[in-house]
Each structure stands twice: as C-alpha cells, then as structure tokens.
Length: 346
Image (cartoon, rainbow, N blue to C red; front, top):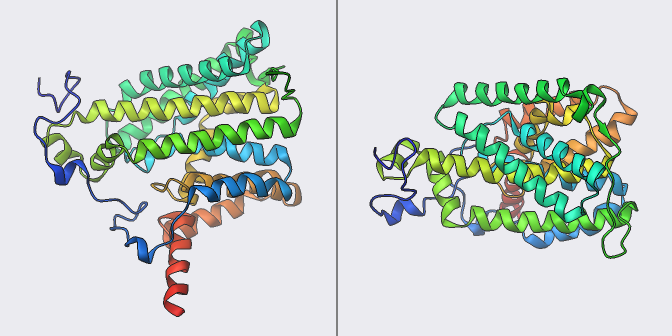
C-alpha cells in the first residue's frame, strides 16, 4: 500500500520538496496570500497577557474565566478548521466526554486537580482518535455530517446513561480540589489558575502551528491531492490533528466542569459544537488569535448582553453574516484592514 494512502506505516514524504515542506502562509478563510509584515499588524503574545490582567477589571472573574476556557476549546477546533481545513461539528464530543470522566473521578474518588486535567487530556485525545479514525477518510459534506452524527451518538449515550452522567440533569457536585494550600473555590484563585493554563495552551498551540507539523497541515489544507502526490500520508496527519484538537478540547472540558461545579448535558451536544465553530469563525479561523477574540465576543454576548436582551443571539447572527459577506477572516481580518487603511491615511 502506498505510504500516501490508507493507513501505511510511513508518516513523511517519500521525496522532499523544500518549496512544499514549508508552504506559503495562509490568510484566514480568504484563500489569498497574506500581506507582508510591514503592511499588516502583528498580534504579540504580550497582548494575551495584557488581556488576562486587564479584562477582570471590567468583567466579573467568572465570565473572564469562562472566556479563557472557551478560548482553549476554540484553539483545538482552529487546528482542524483553520490550519487543516476540516470543519468539525463534533468537538463537544471530546469536550463533554473528558468533562464527564474527569468529573466522575473528581466527585467520587477525590483525585487531584492536575490529575483530573491529565485525565481530561487523555480522554479527549482518545475519543478524538476514535472519531477521527472514522471520519478522516471522508471529505466535504460527508465528513461534516459524520462528525455531526457521531456527536449526536455520544449525546444520546450521555442522555440515557443516567446512573453515571445524570441524564438531562447533568452531573452536579464537581469539586475544585485545593493545591499546595490554595483554595481554588475562590473565584480569583481559580481565575489565576485558568489564565496561566490558557497562556500555556496558547504557547503550545503556537509552537504546533509554527512547527514542521503545522506547515504540513497547512499544506494539506491548501492542496490535499498535491500533498498525497508528494508522499505525505494525509489521513495520518488529519488524524493527528484530530487527536491534538481533542486533547485541547478535553483539557477545556475539565476546566469548564470545575468552574461551574456541574457537567451539563449540553456540554456534549451538537449546539455546543456549533457555538465554538461560530466563535472561531467570527474571531478568524486560521489565525492563532481568532478563537480568542471570538470567545470574548461570544461569551460576552451570552453572559452579559443576554441579561439585558433575551434576543441576544440575533446579534451573533448579524455578526456572522457580516463575517461571511465582508470579512471572511473574521475580526482579525477586519482589524487588519482598518490598520492598513489608517497606515495609508497617515
């Protein structure tokens, strides 16, 4: 069997092509080459650190904590959608599965907080391995619908397995274990922990997308047929992207369960998968900071504006339409256009 097809042993190409191994960068969703660094704004890592410090000054700790958790969730999806070109409506499968398993162990066996996070990463990666194995041989609409269907399957398992998951009532009573005398039941303490883990996740994802692996995933997204012709085992690399994205999703799922003290049934539902897709697209898929910006917009609308206006999803819908029609790279592209216009005007 050819190493470029099926499930052969070889991961790499049978012959090297330096011009392809490090393909051109890609501007989110637009299919256009990016502008040179001199003509487009940069997003320095310090901006995320500044947001971690400044956002709690204007928004409640619980809301900002949820934003960073959702951003970690979005980073995992963005590796699939933005960097590999795989639109998955099944990310909640990994998020919810990890939350249920780690939540059960936290509740009934009293495991430590970092043990729970490790379990979440493992469960997320394992469930992504299973789902990805079934999906990566499909393409286009068939791939999307299969991720959707498998997400529904996991949802109904959680719904029916009431003795473990609690069914539609969810799994309440998830504790936040103390560590080194630090009581993470305090909102500020838990916020600091989640913020540190968010920055660590962002750093890890940046390393991934800038590595040779990240370049290969982008090459597959740009031209899968050419990648296969060069000898890359495309299904293997897609599966690897699935597993890494699932690990990030599972990590976020455990943090989410400990934040609210419950694993709601909705956390493993298709709607939750759709939420992270919308947030990532609004922020800008294919950009490292797109899921973060999208998470800020989505969580702020759902947690703050919803109190003032029950029809807040209309705002999300309007934002999505604007993105689709005018800014296919999301808020990141909109900001880039504004920055370039202001530079020309000056």
